[in-house]
Image 1 (tube, protein in one colour):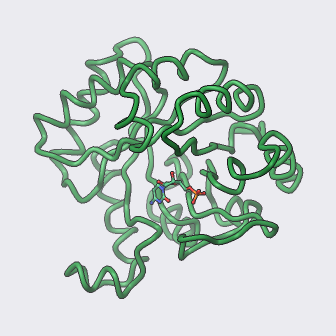
Image 2 (cartoon, helix red, strand yellow):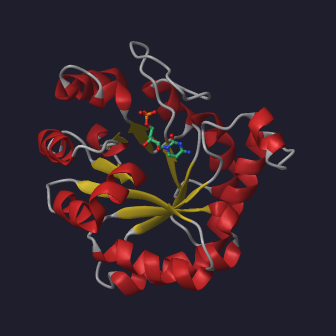
Length: 234
Ligand code: C5P
């Protein structure tokens, strides 16, 4: 990916349909990806995903599927049929579920199957939170372990913290996509994200696509915030 726009994915989190649609139309020419997640999906359903996927950009459908393999395969086919270019599942669903997600993606869009990513460890979880859940591992070890599994099964990449990107790159090679939320330009607030990195540091660490939400969508002029991030990437 040489175009800086392809490295940028703006998260359109919100429950205001008009705001999502108009922000999508404004930002579509500027960024390679727009992300629709659970908040928008549970409010407006696949119709909104289909509408945004028709714009001149690509949709990352951040639906984070996690269920038994048969259900995930069918849901993955539905995700693919929306026209989204990428969607994700939780790596913790295990090997059979990951494999079913790939099958479903091909069933739902034989001509252009979307990329399938695995969510490793949510960037809002630190070591203490993981221990409380029974995963008494360093987050870095857990991320690499789950990324290795996703790579083995044939997924296109992972969602992970940029801090884990170098280890994932070493383990999974140059063609495995590393998509990183928890990105904060120096001029923005950290909010509830715990393991954050600036856009240029994340790219230097090996990230392929940066997911940025509130620093852009919460700015007075989101298009100017995008320009600022792209300029910072150099
Ligand atoms: O507003 P902010 O930049 O924090 O948005 C980050 C986006 O990335 C949110 O949509 C969030 O759901 C998503 N995300 C995340 N951590 C993950 C996976 C996705 O923060 N591991």
